Image 1 (spheres, helix red, strand yellow):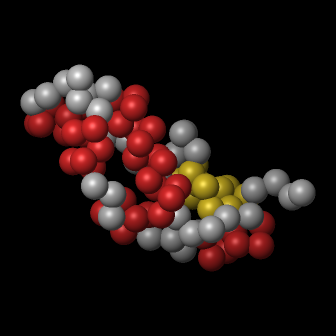
Image 2 (cartoon, rainbow, N blue to C red):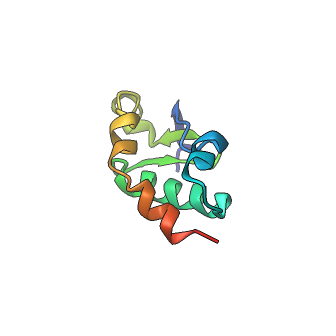
Image 3 (cartoon, helix red, strand yellow):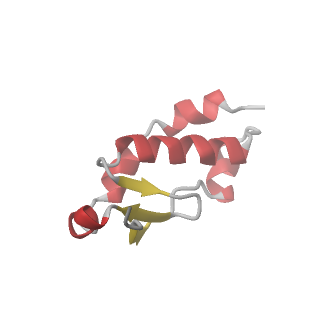
Length: 88
């Protein structure tokens, strides 16, 4: 089975500054994990983002995957709900 090909990098974690504006305490690691899970759910089949933000695709899909609009995928994630689910 061929190795997946790196096709990009996505900064998916929430910044400490953003979390500070919300004014609540969250399990930031669980929030990051939940966002990553949603990104991978919304990404096209054969494309996976890893915890380090690197996106990989099957070799046959690599060229198309390089054109993914990650910002659009990120906009579709309900970050407020994820934060509510992981409040301390």
